[in-house]
Amino acid sequence: MEQNNLKIEVENSGHWSPANVTEGFGLGMTNLRERLKTLYNSGYKLTVTEGNGRVRVAVTIELAHGEHAAIA
Image 1 (cartoon, helix red, strand yellow):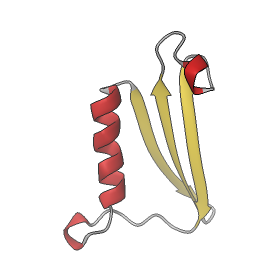
Image 2 (cartoon, helix red, strand yellow):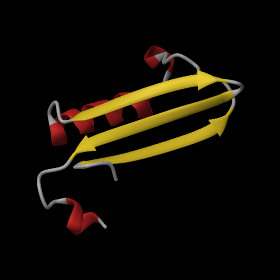
Image 3 (cartoon, helix red, strand yellow):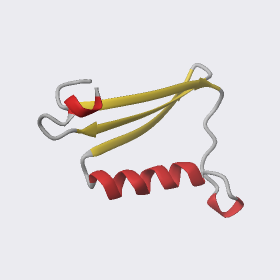
Image 4 (cartoon, helix red, strand yellow):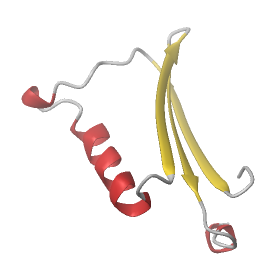
């Protein structure tokens, strides 16, 4: 937890495949973005980075003052 932010990172080996929603791929990321926007409006950041044969997805959520106590 950084300041009043909750940061979650998931990293795995492999390469990032751009979403192709018409063929059913990328639906999970689309759903994640929509749910984050619904729950946190503009109070979140979602990033995907790729390098050295690894892919990392990070979500940072701004917490209201004191909200982190309930999550810990």
